[in-house]
Length: 275
View 1 (tube, rainbow, N blue to C red):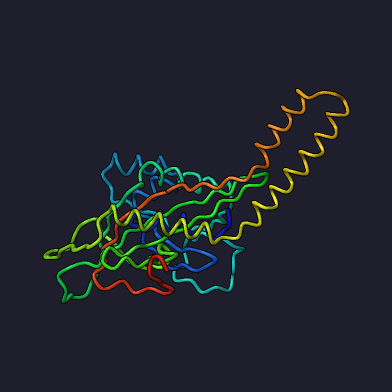
View 2: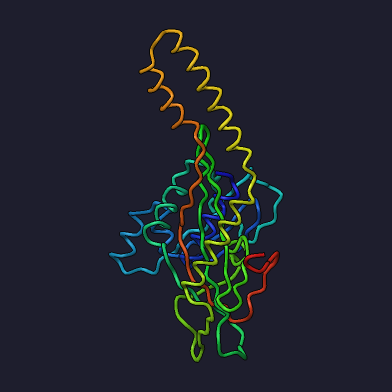
């Protein structure tokens, strides 16, 4: 799993748990955790036991999570945070992945705004975060985040990254309506079509290379075991090699949600579904 994919997982979790994101770029995320996120990933059980028992107002921690070597000359909005480098195997990554699977499989959030509005309905988008598993003798996992307009069917890549700077609430604003046009069934079909197109247009050199290695290994085994007149062992070893080298590709949904925007969602690099 690449560092940008790990960052996308963190970003998704922070948005969906109501954390305040102060800065986000390709190298780091600076965030003040929400109480629920602090309880989950900050590893402060005694602090939260004290807060609960004494009915105190909590003070969640602020972090700067690095997904590349720390840049000491980078001007960040928060000066007092806990810095942590996140890589494969990090405890917080494992906890967040588990939480997204068990607690955050679905969410519905509404954009917050401190300024008066002159609209009466939301611009609604369905977000799906998913992982592509490329499995063979060496494995690779790619995380993707897409957003689909429930009004136009438009699709946006890197959705969670694009909304990381926004603030959301779980409560709908007063006198606001939700007017989606697409049904969830239609949206699901569009998602499947998008992922299918993504897979068919992807670079499959990894699978071709794996198949070539599998054939070479089968030929080597055949030569070795047939010379020794051991067909049973040849069959066994050939089956084992096929399990190791045979390329497989699977899709795993991490979580999804519906995001309602007070104004038309402004984004970059958008395109119509099916194009």
